[in-house]
Image 1 (cartoon, helix red, strand yellow):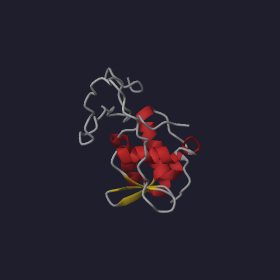
Image 2 (cartoon, one colour; image 1 turned 120 degrees about the vertical axis):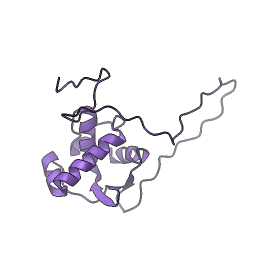
Image 3 (tube, helix red, strand yellow; image 1 turned 120 degrees about the horizontal axis):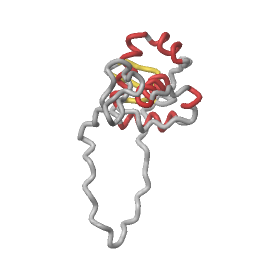
Length: 147
């Protein structure tokens, strides 16, 4: 099972750009995804196959394609992460994906002063990308694949 926390908005946009460039059927065929319309991602008025876009975005983020087998059973968590990245996601049944509900914690006594949280309005940090292979660059700024 793949985790999707490393997939940034920029990786999803790269996958969408490739989807548009190749066309839906070719994009799905190249990466081995079967067409399905239950889970969708909408961006700029266009509808995309969520598992395929997430799988390819995972490739841009980590260097490894998340296959349909990797996504089985984890589409709801992947969809929630895509919502956090600012995308509209629809789940089976046609409704939008609901935001995850978290249980409230009881207040702690003598808790240390809490640090202010990052505002959700702040833009996500854009990771540097290799201009040749479009993989996320390592901390040193060198591409592990092209150098």
